Length: 263
Image (cartoon, rainbow, N blue to C red; front, side, top):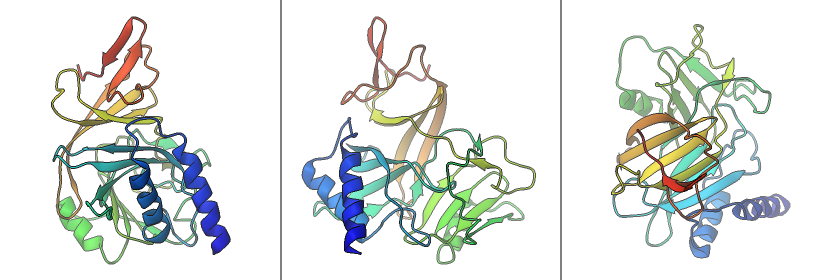
């Protein structure tokens, strides 16, 4: 166990080097690493895998005046989120927000990810009739930990820890057999948080995926951990090559710098 813990600390420390925008203070970062290792390690089914953290932003993502940690993971399993939000108390106590995000369209299988179905810890469920998603997530709590809502079915799995929920009802190309065996999520290139050109007064969470940018306005985080959010998907601007470090939603252009706009 000591050797495993050491490996995990090394992995997390290495990943921190790649954090390049709105990074948390060393005190908040150390507290977060301790929280992950001791209380809420991500993606534990039968054994823990090295946490692959691409970026950590210390920002007020829901515009309530209090900063959260927005963490970009590179997951190991097909049905795991790439973006997770953590609330932080003044005493540096962390609470993972139930609803996470997996921006991007569904992709054909690459073989790069594990499948919780293959290890007997997941199922795909078709629910008859129309029922509010909040009701379904509440019903699944206590029975399953991972819950993904698609337009025509739910994926549920028995990973360890607190419930993690993904709202994928907007994605296209859902298989007619109502299962997730033939696809995986997109890989997120970069995340950034800041004001838009047409709305600099609010923070928006932008995720660069392929040649598109998924832009979320998170209005609030409910007491049950679900997000009141608005998603807008836009094409990446011509020549876009990522957001500038420590500059919100600003990116370089051939003539200088621009702030991301939805129109």
